[in-house]
Length: 286
Image (tube, rainbow, N blue to C red):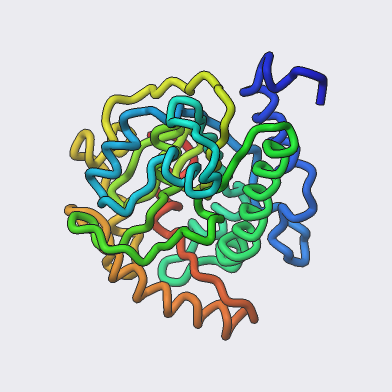
């Protein structure tokens, strides 16, 4: 790292750090016989901690939902920094073409490669989050990955949305200009919906990434134009309908998926992704 690089061009500095880790880390692996990587080159976006969308999500989802300022000050209680001092960095990890192609062929249980990406690919995503936080801290910029905080929980109940967490990677990515929501609940990014997401909050001023959309559903052809709906047909659990995504039906089906991976492949994985493949938004904005 060149001296002063974080001050002169912090966005490029951080983007390069994340991309290099994804490209070079041996942890970016499906841990299969072919040694396939779990993820392709990531997309990265930024937003200011004071973006009003974070406050809106807190009001919309529930009072338990964190703003960037809240999770930062919970992590650094003596910092005294306000939301305008903070930046949220979000990254999109796209599934490989090989994994997507394999999952595209399935109709009830997901492909082995998809299960591996959900298990071992997420293990890598956790290491990436920890690495980003460590690099930022070492450079003098306090940081926290909200989903890695011991205070994070996915056991909240939103009056409007049901089962919820106090920080959402999808919502952070939306604020950071990386995509909009689809009918099945996934985020449609420039690399499509077959992705995994992560984020961190840091005391470092970075110019926010422009949001090339106005609404939460602009990239979904069904919700924005009344067309498509192919994710409804792709869902083996009947969890996706014209009114949206049933988290309870999805979770019940994923229990079967976990048993399937354990019995057939010898590892447990809690991922499906059928609604993210074999659809127009699989790998691009349709």
